[in-house]
Structure formats: C-alpha cells, structure tokens
Image 1 (cartoon, rainbow, N blue to C red):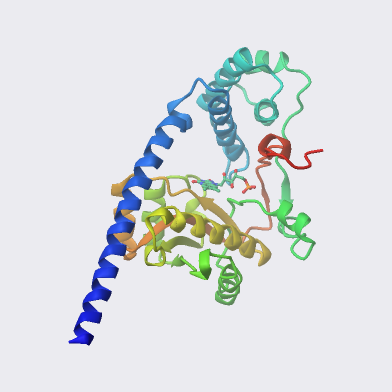
Image 2 (image 1 turned 180 degrees about the vertical axis):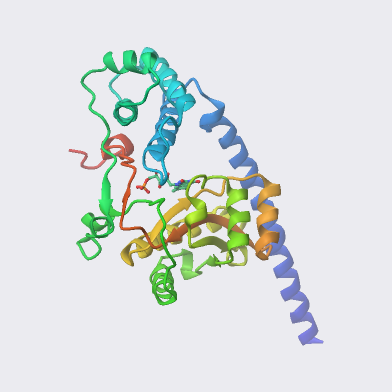
Length: 331
Ligand SMILES: Cc1cc2nc3c(=O)[nH]c(=O)nc-3n(C[C@H](O)[C@H](O)[C@H](O)COP(=O)(O)O)c2cc1C
C-alpha cells in the first residue's frame, strides 16, 4: 500500500512538473513572439539598424560572388543596383559615417575593378563610385591552402582571426580527421553539462544534394562539398519551459567549437543557416531520419580545400559598436 502511494505521489509530482513546464513554455513563446514582432529588422525597415542590416546583406551577396568558385563575370547586376539604392537611401537618412556602409562601397569598387575589361558600360556604378573617391576597393584575399591554415598552431587571437568560411572544396575529408574534429567539438560547454548537440554526417551525395536544395544557401559551391554536417540539439536535454531557447543556445555554442575544430584540422567549412519554413524542416527530418526530439540548429558544408582560393573579407564591427557598459570602468 505504502509503495503504491509513493508511486502515485511520484506520478503526481512528475505530472505537475510537466504542466508547469508547458505553462512556462506557452508564456515564454508568447513573450518571444511579441518581442520578435516588435523588434525584428524585416518588420521595421525605417530604423537605422535595420537599414544597416539590409546593406550588410546586400554587400555580402556581392562579396560572396566575388569569391565564389567558377566565378563568371557579369554576375550580380541586380544586386549592384539594389545595393547602390540602399546606400543612397541610408546616407540620405543617416549620413556617411558608418563603417559597414563604407565597406559596402568598397565591395562595389572591388566589383567594378574586377569588371575593368567588361564590355558593357556601367555608368550608374561609375558615377556612384566617383562620388565616393576616398573609399578603396575591398580586399578579398586570394590565398593558398597553406596561408589559409597558417595560424593553426598560433595563439588564439591569430587563430580566431584566421578562421573564415571557405566555399571552395576539392576533396574528401579523411575519416580520422573527422573523428578528431568531433572529439574537439565535443569539448564545447553546455548548460549543466547536458551536452544537447548531435551531429548527423551526410555522406550520401543524393541526400546531400536534397538537403542543400532544402537549405537554399549553397548555390555555386554546395555540389563540391564532401560532407554536410547537420547539427541538431536534443530536446530531451531541456527540462523547463524557461529553457525554451536552450537547444539553440547550446547547439550554437557547439557549432562554433566545431567550426574552430574544422579549421584547426585543415578542413574547409561553410556554415549554412537553417532559417526555413516548418514544412522544409519536417522534410529534412524525414529525409535524414532525424528523430522528432532533435531540432535542427545548423548545417555545415565541408571538404578539403583546393590549393588556392578566394576568401570573403567579411569585416567585423568595432567592439565599441557592439559593447554597452552598464557602469564600471569604461575608460
Ligand atoms: C548562422 C549562419 C548562417 C549562415 N548561412 C550561410 C548560407 O546559407 N550560405 C553561405 O554561403 N554562408 C552562410 N553563412 C556564412 C556567413 O556568410 C559567414 O560566416 C560570414 O559572412 C562571416 O564570414 P567568416 O565566417 O568568413 O568570418 C552563415 C553563417 C552563419 C553564422
């Protein structure tokens, strides 16, 4: 009888905890939705930060084009016009003193220089650049494999500065290299050491192609990748409703460690978003047989790099642009 009562009590406590977690999750997701609707850039294109984001995305498309394998001249004409329009409008509203916007102009100048001998005239771009003579072309480095991985054993600042995505793949990754990469990636920290992250290695060419088609961000280079890594996080490791972001937070930390591990082991990697519609997410789960309790956090295309290739500069914002001090010793 006592055993039965104890069992009943345990079942009741566990039911109460589940109900509590559900309530927290409902409140949490409602809060997230309200916060997202109020703050997401795409819904507020009139704000400076959102306008800057549009420009960064605009120059990123061209920067990617400038460094893509099998690059064909004449690419991105629409993207050039779109970016010039965005810059004109930004400068009119917010002025010209904005590093990311200056880089956007630098990318346009690099684009123009690449098309120096292109037979079609580009009068609008030429006038646009002539009005901004002080901005030099962006430097999208052309490197050898040895140069790209030269800081492999350097102290962390040099190593971290040397890591970049690489969209050039030339060969298969040895199995022992991948095993060493995963062992290093697993050192990523996680909440209560719960180790939410999982890795699905997509080796089959047909599955990889389907996955990349669903993902949509590998045009021009995905077909060269040796493997796709799908990083998921196990929702069974999440305990409370307030931990509704934990799968993505812990998964994201793992992804960064994985990228460093790939770079350390001389493997070229390109991180790929998983910002997809629910139907696409379901399709990827079905395609790869990913269990329902795993959420897809990120996809990574990887392979051994060719002997030489181009890298997108992708300059970062200065620390003072992203850091806010709340008291303490700012100076
Ligand atoms: C969350 C995330 C999603 C990304 N998605 C894509 C993608 O779909 N296609 C792509 O070519 N690059 C993608 N990238 C790569 C970024 O463009 C790249 O990391 C960024 O420009 C900074 O460059 P770096 O990694 O070389 O320093 C993604 C990166 C991150 C972190």
